[in-house]
Amino acid sequence: MTELPRTLPLAGITVISIEQAVAAPFATRQLADLGAQVIKVERPGGGDFARRYDTTVHGQSSYFVWLNRSKESITLDLKADAGRRVLERLLAGADVFVQNLAPNAAARMGLGAEALTERFPSLIPCSISGYGSSGPWADRKAYDLLVQCQTGLVSLTGNEHGGARVGVSIADIAAGMYAYSGILTALFTRATTGVARAVEVSLFEALAEWMNQPAYYTRYGGTQPPRIGTQHATIAPYGAYPAADGKDVLFSIQNEREWAALCEQFLGQPGLVTDPRFATGSARVAHREELNAIVAERFGELDSHEVTKLLDAAGIANAGVNDMKEFLAHPVLSGRDRWRDVRIPGGAVVSALLPPVDLAGAAPRMDAVPAAGEHTDTILAGLGYSPADIDGLKDERAV
Image (cartoon, rainbow, N blue to C red):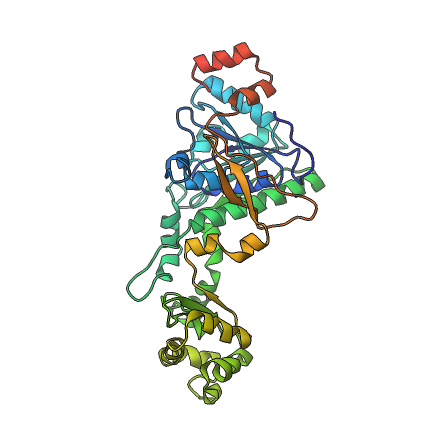
């Protein structure tokens, strides 16, 4: 297998991943960022189907470019005996195995956690599923928006006209993050105890964790938080309002000191501080419509720059509601030097954001996004296959 410089925290760790879509690739890309060798096992004749989600990044998928830098790609037909033998050799030298195959597919192939632990005691298996490997929904397929619906998230998003999907694949991202942290925990446990523990994460339970606050609110309050667009369901005023120039500015009142500052320095109505309708957080939520009318009237007298300047002077957190072009040009990203060049299949170079965690003394890997099967020959040679052996595997269409 390819030798990597031992300068990053996970250098020397090898991860084999039978992955597709978002959740598993997101987990393994973060391991690659930290220096792990991530070998992505793809289907011959096309690879990960996320490669074809769109073609917007110089002919490549925006999802795939985001999730798969710094990995090596090998194509294997896992239905062929020869392909399975290659996988077994890969697993014999690996530290971590990740898969997000269809329900029960891994177990049918002998790649379930129990079977792998028996064959490879030091291997850490990680399974990412829709609803878990047991229970009444273990056999159901799950995609991001289905899980957003099942966890009640869509019942909270949107506005009075209806629900809305969260604009990114939040269930996949949540599951990928928990898989990543679970794998790091398992690696630490193995290093300190010698025991390799399996990791299991489901999209449903990952997003369910993030739904705890509205779940508590609903269970013990009797009603669920209302669907109110950019407003906060349980704090007021907290939301976006249009300024006179048409730009929305969102601000947040977190305590009574900020409420007084808003009334006195921004609204110019100090009497509102002790107005019984607004004197407490609960009262402001109960009289949200009246309060919103007062705030909206003041916003309508000012352009967005004036709004921001006055709110800043009052010590009240605020932000313009950016579109994607404004996000891409954000001064924090440029001012903190967060962009790096990454090469993608076909030779083009794209701008990629650095991982959000800065580790002192260790710059993350920002290597190329692989073409499907780009590293097949190199990986096979590293496993001890001769050129003739590799040609034979290709003749059999096992790779």
